[in-house]
Image 1 (cartoon, helix red, strand yellow):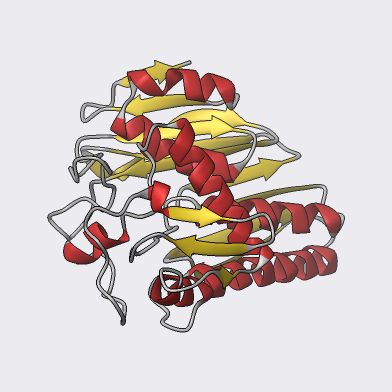
Image 2: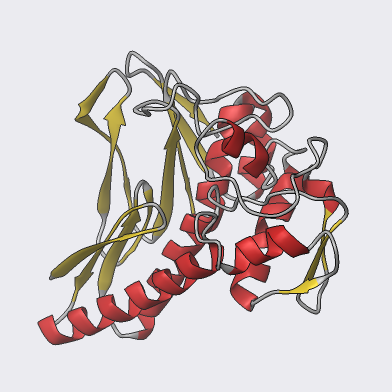
Length: 277
């Protein structure tokens, strides 16, 4: 077994691979290469990233984007549509106003801009109907985890776990998922066991900023201040995005969880568990 950790995507990403030492090290290196590529393309903080270029220019003219960014944006818009806007990748403006993200250069976003103002064509071009700031932080980590898992499989690893700050996917051996207790951050709670599945956890607590970084797009209200949501499904990109949908509308998210073959657990302030689907 070999395990390595590197800082990417605004968190510490760890990869554990079960294989002969040299194969495991090579596979982990290749997986981190995939994650690094996604980080460089989708970083809101980096003014030279592909996402930053899109935010600066797509309201003026259609912009060609890479297959990586096209896939993630397509998934984000599909989730926005399916959730009735409970997930919305255009929340960048609110997160900048509340100090979670740096203000980009260029035109200020329209305060009325929403996900429906983003047009994505099949030929890989993106156009904004009005100025807006996309933030893919609510779904890109899951995509990066999925890409890393695909890379590890192709390298011939027998089993592995990739964990990007609570966005986790494993294959091969069974894996116990631990989450923080909402009232006791240094105490872990064994929540579930998985095998060949993806799990993501989101919460608004343990944050130095008084405003939660998870926002209800329609009202701007902060979410997750009193507990956490963990979603389990097949792919990390959907688990990642669905945690925000469940936080915004727990009961109303059940049909969408069912459609995507997902389940959710809410952990409240006292450590009580509330299961959805």
